[in-house]
Structures are given as C-alpha cells and as structure tokens.
Length: 495
Image 1 (spheres, rainbow, N blue to C red):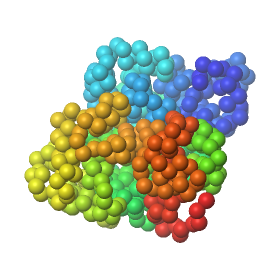
Image 2 (cartoon, rainbow, N blue to C red):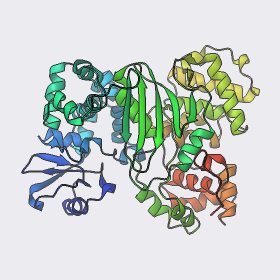
Image 3 (tube, helix red, strand yellow):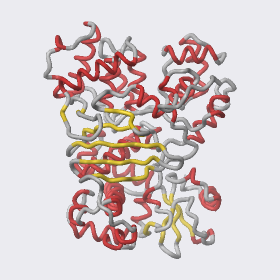
Image 4 (spheres, rainbow, N blue to C red):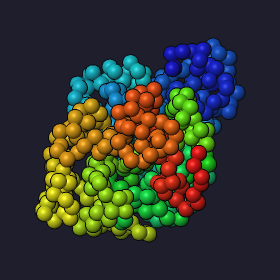
C-alpha cells in the first residue's frame, strides 16, 4: 500500500486507525515518522513520504513520533494472513529468532539462503532482517524502560542488544531521547507488584468482539496451565529462555496484559505469542466486509462485528490437545489434558491456580504409551504426533510452511480432516481453514438456512475465502455453547 502515494495521503488525512500498521508516514521537514492515525497536523503533501515498516523509516533516518508512538501500533495483518516466505520470516523475527540465532538461523528455518531472505525483505519492507530485528529491539527496550524499574544495563541485554552502547545509540536514534529521559517522561516510579512483572497495553484494530475469543479459551482451559479468573484469562508460558505467566483482560480499546517472566529476554517473544493467541493483528474490516456479502452471515456480523479466531501460544501444544480431544466432550478433553499436565508437566510457582507448564514434546516422547488412559487408536495417533514433533519431522512453529505442515499432519494415521483443520486454524493461524464436518458448524448452518452437508457447505463457503476460519467463528456464535460467549455473561437469544 505504501507505494500508492495518493491513497496513503487520503488515509493519513482521514486519521483512520484502521491503517495503523499497514504503512508509516514520514515527515520530511521534521524527520519524524508517525502512524496514519496520528492526531498531529499533517504537512503539505510534498513533505510526506511513506514506508512499509517502522524499520524502513528508521533506516531512512526518521525518528518515532512521541505523540502517536508508531512503534507500538498494531502489527500488519499481512504476516498472519499469508504463508509465503516474507510472512514466515516476519513471524519468526517477531518471535525473536534473529536475536537468538542471527540471520543464518532465520534463513535455515526458512530453507533459503541469507542473501535470498535479505533481498525479499528489502523488496517488500524496505529493510532487511537485521534492521527489522533492531526496530523490534527498540520497541522492547521502550516497554522495559517505561513499564518497569530494571537497571538500564539489564534492559539493554533483556531487549536483545549486544552492548549497552548499542542500546543507548539505538534508543537515541529511534526516539530522540536517552533511556533515562524516556523513563522520566513516562512518569513511572512505582516498582512492579512482583519481580519481573510488567503491565502492558496490547492494541488492536476495531471493531473487536471478544466474546467467542475469551469464551473459547475459558471453556477449553486446561487446569493448572490456564484459567479464567477475575475477568481475565491467565496461563503459563514455555519460552526460549525460561517460563512465564500472562494475564489478558479485554477492555474497550485495548487488551490489558500483565506478564511475569523468569527471564526478561523473553519479553518480545511473549508479547508476540499473546498477540497471536488473541489474533490482535487481524483486519476485521476486510474480513467482515467480505463475509457480510452472504445474507446468511450478515445478521451475525451486524450483531457482533470483529470476531477473532482463538489461536494458541504453542502450536505443538494445541495439536496434542486436539488429538486428546478427538471424539470426546470438551469437559472430557480438559480432564485428559489435566492428567497429562499433572503427570508430565513442569511445576512452576505462581499465584492463583496456575501450577504447571504444559509438558514438552521431549518429556512426552519418553513416557510409556500404555500409561495414557485413552482408546488404542487415539493413543497411537498421539504417540506418533509426539514423535514427529520431538524429532523435528513435523514443524508447526510460527515460521512453518503451512502446506508442508498440513501434509505432515495428514500423513499421521489417526489425524483426520477435522483435527488437521482445527490445528491449521488455531495452531498454524491459517485464516482460510474450514471445518465443514464440525457438528457445531453444521448445526448452525442448518439453523441459518445454509447447506448442512459437508460437501454442499464447502462449495457454498468458497465465496467466503480467504476468511473461512472467521466464518466458522460467526457460525459457532449462533450456537448456545458457553465457548461462544464471554465467561460469566448470561445466554442471549439466537440471531
């Protein structure tokens, strides 16, 4: 979009927040870059330039606006919608791969040379992997500076910088303030309630209906790993450098996020996983505009627009839980998963009812299959899936190739189309994954006058592409299942 100058000018002058994250506006006279919705008075058209990423604007010598904080805008929806190498690279960079493994590690995960990755990212984003990772480090540093009381040297290394000098230079270049000035300007001064805890605001694009999102997470929560408490979703996190816990509370204009990490270097990755879990970088206007063209879905969308797809912080965990839940009720699936967590999960000390991390694939690969209390066929499928994940034969990570991952799932006996599609929808993040055989989907389709047989419904749903995963959320919302409404909210009549 950034190459269409006139369109960008119109979007910037309209102050439309829907375009935040799609492109960035740079003012040539002040050398400042902003998000499109920045309330500041814009200059003449000839004094504006547009960039596809904050990293590209920073690399061109512009600093972040102190008023609209463009570095904290919602991420571009493109990276969660697409499955090409650039989108996969962006998901991996957001997860901290470049900071942990460098550009060679990023390239190895993608199956390309470092030169090819550099060339493709430059062509589409105007910045290479190092510049994109640097921009992310700057934003992570800002969060740590403003939301906590860590010493600046600790902030530098926790944000991924190799030295305090590089940290100071980057913060000055990006924000035109020293780290100490940033902290003073934030007006903080209160230490976190617990060591390592940070309180953040996770932005999203409106409209946003959180009912099915948090309803689904609460209804399927595994005791010990997840819980709904005091109006917020809580869970434990297994992260590259350690572990953590997160609390996510829906508010009208943002998600209130409270993170407690055993290692602050995991901050950027933890934020990325939370945003992915709640599908916060989605473009609801584009999704709803297409789905609303179907008169069967339009009343559901008009009633509660902006539904998101409940995803996951760990696709491997989601896949294992999907197999555990085959052909049993939601309550039975939670019980099976809770037993697995108690027996093989890693104990952690937290407040509330969170007691364990979900078992790692390495721990599950070492257990005796006979100890799993489930039918033989499901036990065999579960064991094969664990082995494929532990050996690296099946990659479901944020940078995985969706086509290859689906083929790998289909090759495991006992994993049928429904299981593969739910993993693709919630684990891989495929926005076009569809569940035509799902009982709830078929029941809702029949109630709305849509075809109710899987084949006929699939043919009808071709018009919903590439947003069929979102259509599933609207169909599920027509049911009375607790997963379709906000926890604690009374039942409503059907649309």
